Length: 58
Image 1 (cartoon, rainbow, N blue to C red):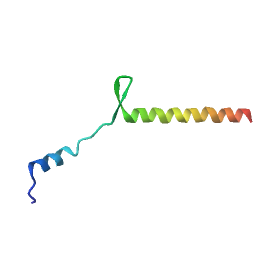
Image 2 (image 1 turned 90 degrees about the vertical axis):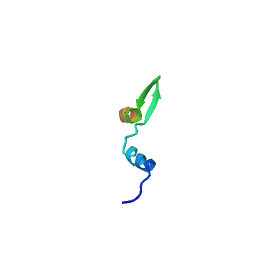
Image 3 (image 1 turned 180 degrees about the horizontal axis):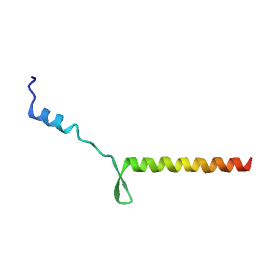
Image 4 (image 1 turned 135 degrees about the vertical axis):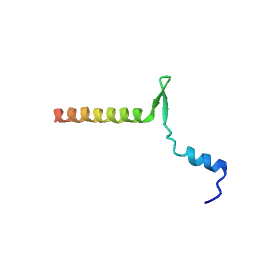
């Protein structure tokens, strides 16, 4: 087995921990995936409203 220094062992043990990306929104920390999903949903809704408006005008 290889000689592993204690600092290397700590890195190996800590590298499996999950890092959560957060965004400061209105003074609160919110998960970045939540903001991303809301942005995608809003843009899809806007595109749907615009396309329905175009269909009605034609």
